[in-house]
Image 1 (cartoon, rainbow, N blue to C red):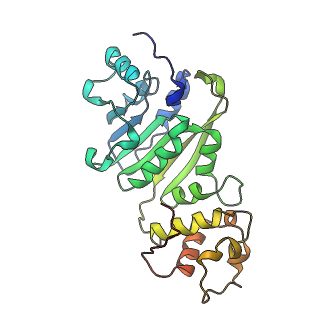
Image 2 (image 1 turned 60 degrees about the horizontal axis):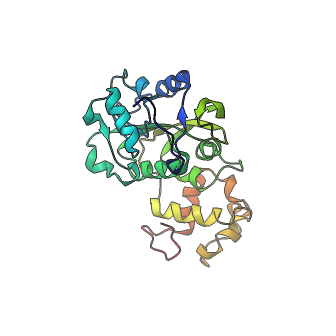
Image 3 (image 1 turned 30 degrees about the horizontal axis):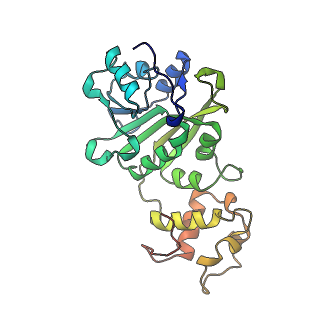
Length: 267
């Protein structure tokens, strides 16, 4: 087999620029001294070739059987390094006993889900280096005050330091996507106590951004009890103006009891 046909339903766009693959591999910092790297969606192994020389235990997970067959025939990896399954369905805690990095040129149609899968396993995944649709990459990495700043920004940045590294243009892929791509790096914060429960933070952030153009006194109305002082300056702000730390303080202010159980809580 000389070539894998990119499949639209899997969101496959194969990166053909070898120097960009090298740059993605070079962005791995071994933050927290992990030794295992898991590449999601290796395709024909363009990035894999640059991950192999790193001093790591490397595995790849690939749902596309044709890509798996290509990797086996190419002998780029040993058979036990290739996991022929769906990353989103993997139980990472059962599969990996030591910290790891998640790396890849991620399929656009599941890239956000990959990050949220990482967040579910944040005690295991010390680092993520990956390529996303540019606007999705910016959404995860941007700070307060930006129109891209939203729910995903706050929830990811509560647990990871996130950097937007570089932009990749459409013509670097086969087939070329209709949008630019962006590479980000996420490194786990090792102060695991963010200051409130994850459930509480998620509820407040999602409720606030559900009506992002309104001030917090209006967007959070369903959560505000009579004993909350609505004249505080924070309630005159809009959600995109608050940092992660300010959202944590706000969550503790309006939902002082933890853990919370609420019918409004988003899963």
